[in-house]
Image (cartoon, rainbow, N blue to C red; front, side):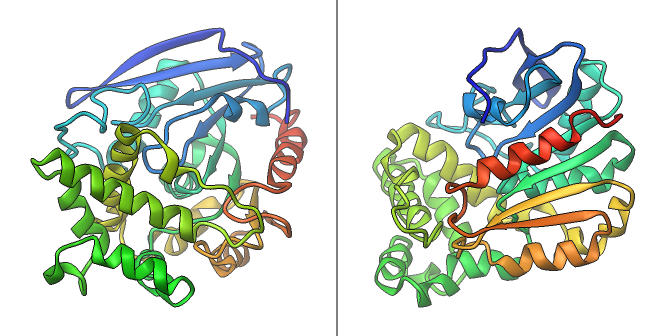
Length: 316
């Protein structure tokens, strides 16, 4: 990765519905535009996300999606209304940010949930996307959401039993993400905190089979756990506000957009066939499978930098 850099410009963008988004730009003001879509949903952008691009050749845009990071209102507040936070809202936010910054087309990069959002954006606004660089390929399809919240119990049975037991008995055979979402908005702060910890414990369990994978969400401060868990369960409990199978169905809209997808061999919660099927259906895409990585880690960053380096001098 490139050395750490600081933004040369930051700001806030009013996108309506009472939401204000934090954004930042770093690198070369005259460089090739690129936007980074963070994961989660709800994790927020990080300083390391700036480092996947050559700062001499890219104008790098990062922002916190609705209710995440430094955007307001924040999902970690005791009470928060997520009704105006859906995938269509986020797609419109991206267009408003692009127009606000005076960008015609940009490279779109994203990891995990940022992959789903990036693909949805590119299919909705293909004329605004010069390339796609995607890390840890995900899908919003119902079978994959069930795979993560239910079928993964066959891989981690002890941990899944604890995860399932975290919701009321009457909810245990239903949509576990939706059940956790209800708990995460319970009036009792103790109920919210326990649900957030239980959800984050499960996330750290299933996210990777890579040797030495370190816990991340389960050791976060409680308020940050609550914010991310609320947003993830809000999206998963609603099918990510996309039609089932939509991204693969509309993949023909990516024709003419070059893309690199980087996926870890040890990513058990994101089966490799999701990336494989997308690669087969998307002409002009390249799939890079990293043998030492799960849902991130290993040498995945090097593969992403290689992709952005290759695209750096191509016309937008």
